Amino acid sequence: MARFDVRSLPAVWTRELIIFKRYWPGTTFTAVLEPLIFLFAIGLGVGAFIDEIAGVKYVVFVGTGAVATAVLFSSVFPGMYNTFIARVFQKVYDGILSTPTTTAELMVGEASWVAARTAVYGSVPMMATIPFGLTPRWGMLLVPFICFISALGLTFLGQYISGLVKVIDSFSYFQSALLTPLLFVSGTYFPIDGLPKWFGTISNVNPVYHCIELVRDACFGTLSPASLWHVLALVVFAAITGTLSIRVMTKRLIT
Amino acid sequence: MTKRFGDFVAVNDLSLDVQPGTCLGLLGPNGAGKTTLMRMITGQTGLNGGSISVLDFDIATQSREARAVLGVCPQQDNMDDQQTARENLALWAALCRVPRAQRKSAIAKALATAQLTERAGERVTNLSGGMRRRLLLGRAFINSPKLVLLDEPTVGLDPQVRSDLWLIIDAMRRSGVTVVMSTHYIEEAERLADDIAIVNHGRVIARGTPHQLRERYVGVEAVEYFGPPEVLDEIASKAADAGLKSRRAGLSISVLGVENTSVELLNSWGRLSRRPTNLEDVFVLLTGESLDG
Image (cartoon, each protein chain N blue to C red):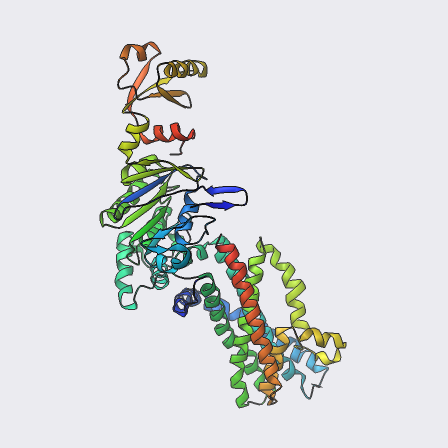
């Protein structure tokens, strides 16, 4: 197996940059608007009935949770759909792999681009929550980095899923059975400590939960050595999904 | 080299060497193993047996280095549709690691090769089939490769566009680049290839220049008879009795290598027309399969 060469990454990013320059309004609109809708609809809507939750205003609680919604939507879907389209319909990956780029470099290059983009998109709901009572803190500067590492693992997960399916319609199974539970059993809209204990156990393998916990620690000034557990969980998740993504894509692309 | 997909042997103990600066034509029907062979050369299809060396790079251990000196024009168009011609070339220049300082001139040269300088800012989706193919050819040359793989470079194009592409490929060949081109168009192989390998069922079944192949297998001259199937069957039988090879093509039969056969004998079998033998005669005779185009 060829050694990983970081010099391939700028070339992969070049492709992403060309595409982004053309489609950024649409991509950005969707990535930013959806979490904001969640923030306003649930944060303000449900917040009219719930004053505080876990010691903070409900809209602030949801606003910080919406960061993870943005991270999930902006990373796992490009990982699934863009990868499938490029591989199966456009055959672009076949072309790229005839150049000095390897499957691992291609997958890591694409995932790191999506993660970098998501670092920006994920921070928008946090910024939008400030006028509703989220107190600006220096720790918030860490949020883009938290979004990046979370999005990296989730993009790899999307790539892995795209390598498992034969037809694009099959994504709906993963969306319903995997992604929706990931979002709702993560503490985005309600604290999971109010749920049965086994939910808490399951949430430990949910990257969205770790993302939200870290984001809230950063936003509420509660970062502590215990936060490192969440960082470690996200790093391990990215390492596992990255390995799976490269493995399945190699199987699909190198016959 | 050998490549199996389950029980199916796509490339069967095939051995091939290509001389630098020549154009090798891989001539074979669909499913003969040509595309698999091309993918094996780029390292995108693994080997079950044997080895491949590209310009002294072992594909098993140095495929990245080999791909750096390769240019590839795939059978299936795999350009980013929504990018412009220039953007596609810029991307390829980056992927092929063309030094940044040389990229602008490499892109300009590739656009000129593809005769698309005026359409550089056009999205690929708006280009015609012929223009897209020319762009793919230009793209294959973006890194000034030493070896170019052309997988069915003109498949599905009309004759005029095909002729235009032949001019580009011929110019590449004349520039000293080594070309390996798969095709199932006889005329393409005859016009462009210095050397032809006829491939069928994953094997090279004949190898030589077009002239050598004709001379070796079907002689110089053929006669063609038209008629109902039973008449053609009878002519085939008479040809075999006379020690001549023949091949059927729809409503006609060609008797091959008749340059030393008496005119009276040939005329006695029916009304005939004479023609020079061609590569298709060689191919059909060797494989029993007809070629498209």
